[in-house]
Amino acid sequence: MIHQLLVILGNSQLRRLVLVMVGTLVACMLEMIGIGAIPAFVGLLVEPGRFMAALPQSALTGWIRQTDLASLILYGAGLLAGLFLLKNLYLAALIYAETRLTADVTASVSNRLFRAYLYSPYTFHLQRNPAALVRNLIGEAIDAVDFVKGGMRLVREGLVLVVVFLLLILVDPLVSLSVFSLLALASGGFYLAVRRALTKRGQLSQAHWNRQVQVINQSLGAIKDVKMLGREPNLMELFRQEVRCIRRHDTFYQVVGALPKLFLEVLAVAAVLLVAAAFVLLGRPVQAMLPVLTLLGVAVVRLVPSATCINSSLADIRYKRPAFDLVCGELETLEAPIAHQPGTAADHSEPHNMHDAIRLNNIHYRYPGAPAEALQGVSLEIDAGEAVAFIGTSGVGKSTLIDILLGLLAPTSGQVHVDGRDIQQNLPAWQRQIGYIPQDIYLTDDSIRRNIAFGLVDDEINDAALARALQAAQLEPFVRSLPEGLDTLVGNRGIRLSGGQRQRIGIARALYHDPGVLVMDEATSALDDETEREIIEAIGRLRGGRTIIMIAHRLTTVRGCDRLYLLEAGKVKDQGSVAELAARHENLRVLTAMVAENNIGVV
Image: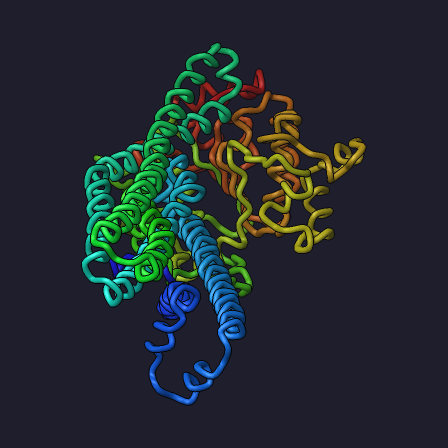
């Protein structure tokens, strides 16, 4: 537990937590003084003689004895009011410090968790469900800090109970032990009865939250399929089931937190009444029992909220322990590997501009848990300024090879050298000179400007670079035709644009930072023939010294390439121009003829 707390808290936050705990001890002392002052004042009112006799001999008590009763009562009332004012001002400041601490820890944990996910290797995201990551960021991070907050409340209110108990013991041990035993048995028995159920329901709630986010992502992410297949009722039912389960578990947790207050109030009132009845039956005078009953009443008024808060904190700790364990595990597992990873901090060094060639030396790659290698000893060379394409049937390793070139995947064995240097030695420098155009362009529900300068805030957007990218992607006429120009909203995933327009925005995004290497991963496979021809012509005009690497879906895409690499079963089977490969491979010869006659064809 201590180790996990150190994972959650930073050094400054840990120091602040210690200061809050010290401040809590001071607050408990003030609580004890405040509670003890009330029966003392009542004693002055009902038995002033006995009150004076109990005072020790000193200069101050001598002055008190010489003061008339009316003035003494006024002074006492003012002192008591001032004491409670100062005590509550101090408590308000302590609550503010505690609240600020928990708010800062919540923000810190969320930021650290998001950073850990962002900087984790690409393979991490291949194996994790995005719905679980979203749930962790927006739900589990908050619940993990609530667990810590519950522990802080438990310590604070536990100290209050100890202080009040010690004060009552000094006044009347028998009565104090009786009242405390009654409250402790009631609270402890209730907690023991529900603690296992709270832990179990916390784990179930976590699982249902994950499935709820997953249903949302899948339903809205595939809304066209949902509409065409008429799956709205089915998905609505799945969502309704998850919401119902989450609400059921949360209701149990909230009821468990609220019930103790009701029962403890009844027990506390019953305890005070029983003590009063016992005093009467024992024949004690009213004047003698009033200060004790006042102390007991004030103590009970303070004890009931403390006992309630302790039960609520224990419920928090049990119900939110799964979230705390999960977040600690994520941070501990993910933060250590990226702590000294290149690129995790702001890196403003110059990109590694390629002048010679890219060389792949005996590249092997196996996906985690996969039975066979996706790439088996791939060796090839791409000269600077050359346009090359990887062709082959589905599943032969084309996309894996591109991901290796991009640095998203590190080879199981072998190296990728650019101008003689291994790209893994300074991956950010290599990646900053690459413009990447994927098959599916992800557009945010934002303006064209922000989609091209993806991930940058407005103050960081370079208007000159933006204009250059628009011109290169041949987007200027389209943008000028829009009433709002670059500020036009494209809709979620670019739903308000055509396929060609989305692709051109993707090209402009890839060209925004003027890369020396342009990588296309089947970037035109979803386009019609006419739009594809326009996009390929636009890309052809971009060569001008750029190195272009592409995965080809159609032969029409690769006709202008200097060299093609034919992949088969994770290996380079052959290489050469379109004509050279067609001469050596019957299936390519047939498809090349079809392309020449009909301008179509698929590889």
